[in-house]
Length: 109
Image 1 (tube, rainbow, N blue to C red):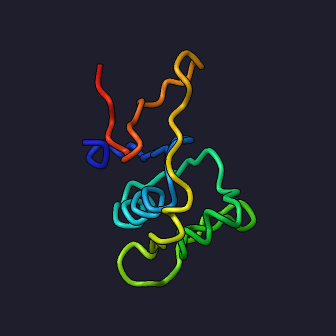
Image 2 (tube, helix red, strand yellow; image 1 turned 90 degrees about the vertical axis):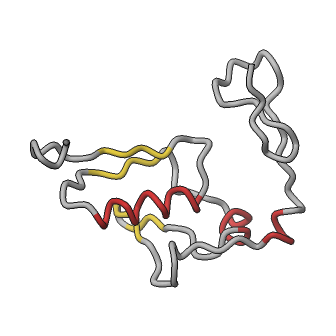
């Protein structure tokens, strides 16, 4: 419907997202005619994130870039990722992100 009425998209990747989700969103952006803008909280991923997710999107001079690798272009180094287990936010901290178990499963109220 948005395309039909000339409405451009403005997809936003939140602060709890990762390079894999952002790359997938960017591929969607490239595939639709009514692409407007791709928002992101922070592409300043540190060295560890870039090592765990080789091929993650990069920010250069205000533009986001994908690489030319097959698929969505981002891989996951699972052995390196295992060294950084997920640490849930402490209860009562005010974060609105989903509470998750150590294996990443979302805990529903």
